[in-house]
Length: 401
Ligand SMILES: [Zn+2]
Image (cartoon, rainbow, N blue to C red; front, top):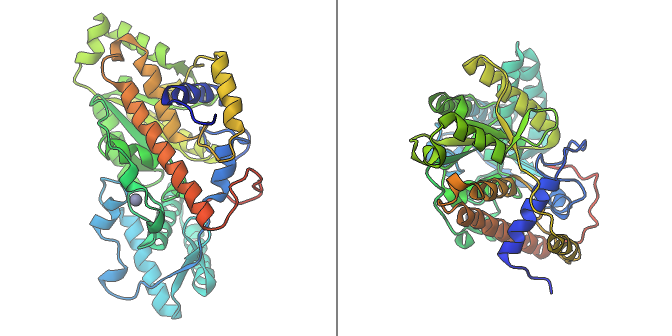
C-alpha cells in the first residue's frame, strides 16, 4: 500500500524537517539532506535542450516590467539587470552572433557564450569592491536566466510550457499576520525544481515575497518592511548549528511574555510576523545568512538576527514505518525537501501554539503540501516523457543548477 493520508504526510514532513541536519555537501539545498530521494531527483531534473534566443534590436530583446513581475516579483526591474541585457544586445551586434542557452539554469553556449564569458569576467575583475561584485554577479545570473527562459518556461510555475502545472495548484490565503520572504540565491531563480516559488503560487506574491540575494531593489523592499515591523517581528528560519537558534515555541513564548497580555496579545497586534526562508544550497546559504546579519547590523546596530529552527516533531513509530514505506516507493519523492517543506513545518508548529491555533495554519500548510505533490508529479511526468530514468541511481557528480 503506497498511498498515505495527508495527515501522515504532514507528520512525515515535520519528522523529516526535524531530522535534517546541517551538511557539508555544498550542493545540497539548505533545507535538504544529501541522500534523500528528492535531492537525488533534483540533481537531474533540470536539464534542458539548447535553445537559441534572438534578441535583435529594439524593444523585443528588452525585459518589460510586466514580464519581469510575471516571474513572481513585485519589484521594479533591477537597473543592473536591464544594463546587462542591453550589454548583451550590443555584444550580439558587435560579434554578429546570436546568444544560445542550454544545459542548466540559463547557461550561455556557443561562440556568443565564449565571448560573453570573457567580457563579463573582465567587467567583474575591474569592479572595485565586493558589494559591487556581488551585485554584478547576481544581476548577470538573473539576466541570463530571464533571457534563457523567455518563451520556454511558464512564468508562474517555472516549468517548461508543455509541463505547466498551474491549473493543478490550489491557491489559499495565508493568515494576514504572516509574511514569508523567500531570500533566494540567483542560481535558484527560475529553477524548475525550486520549491520556494510554490509559496507565492499558493499564497500570492504579497504573502510570500521573493527577495533575490544581491539584487538591490529586492533587498531594499525587504529591509524597508523589516524596519517598519521592528526586530521583534522578524525571524530567519536557519537550521545551522553555528547560529543562535530558538524553537518556534521558545520564540513565541518569549514573544508572549514580552507582550504580557497572554493569548490575545499576538493575535490582536496589527503587525506582521516576517519569516525569512533562505532558498539556496548549503554553501551559498552561509554567505546569504552573513549578508542578512550584516544588513541587520546596519539597521538595528547588532548582528544577531533572530533565528528559529523547527523542533523535533513527533517521532512515533508509525511515522518511522511510513518513512520506510516511502523509501521503497518506485518514484522520487519530495519528502525531506526544501524551502516549501520548511514553510509547511513552520506553519504546522505554529498551529500547535495556543495563540495561533485559530487561524487555520494547518489548512494553509496543507495547501503547500498539495502544491509540492503537484510539482513532484509534474517533474516526474516530465522526466518520463523525456525518456529519463526516475530511479534513484543518479550520479552525484552531476552539476546542480
Ligand atoms: Zn505554469
